[in-house]
Image 1 (cartoon, rainbow, N blue to C red):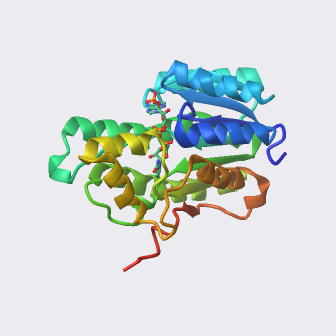
Image 2: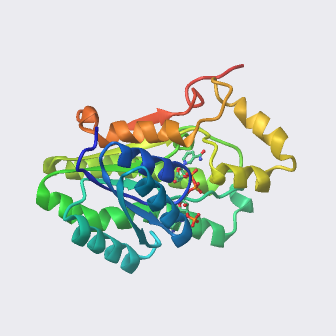
Length: 257
Ligand code: NAP
């Protein structure tokens, strides 16, 4: 029970990495506030947590809308009285080289991936500052560190999330609040499945191609990232501050040829 009695708010927890993390955190004793845009997906996560004997509530909010996020944080605090861990996980893909990226796609990806870290943090931090305690995990990506084809706006947002993580850590260290970032490589989730279907003609061929980016020769699983998030959320990582944590099968620092 590495998170016994901790209250955790996870954005985008209706699918993929967020869902897997919500299930794992609940098994480890956390009370989980499950946020998602989709009510059906968010409620499914809560039901699965309850089926395994855990405690969770679904709070619908669009992380790009300040009034939604403010209300979500207020309701979480009313229910559980505290928030120990905020996992800013919600994110969307954006495929294209810069000149191929529409202004609309640019704005939406920046909004979800960057404002979606800003707003939940903005409304949770006053509470953490008051308690002089807290842990924030921001979802970046290994594309923050390496150039990847046709990922202009997506890479820009994930690089910004990594920089923001470091800036936040400096500002909130005096309040005993840790802020770290996760940098996954390619993890097989609905997000990547959609990307492969939209960006390539042949799904299976695309899957084989992207597996080769990893030294492991395999893609990661949501559970791989959830385990890393658990480490960052628990006191075991208490000396980690403002740090990137890579879960990428060697994609960032290794090269096969
Ligand atoms: P996913 O399966 O698509 O899950 C993302 C979740 O975020 C979805 O449930 C989605 O809800 C939710 N969401 C999207 N926009 C939202 C908004 N405005 N407000 C609230 N929730 C919103 O994706 P994933 O692969 O687990 O990705 C999770 C995070 O990891 C993202 O930040 C992604 O960039 C990052 N990441 C993923 C990979 C990878 O390879 N999978 C690698 C590095 C980083 P709806 O389904 O209702 O839209």
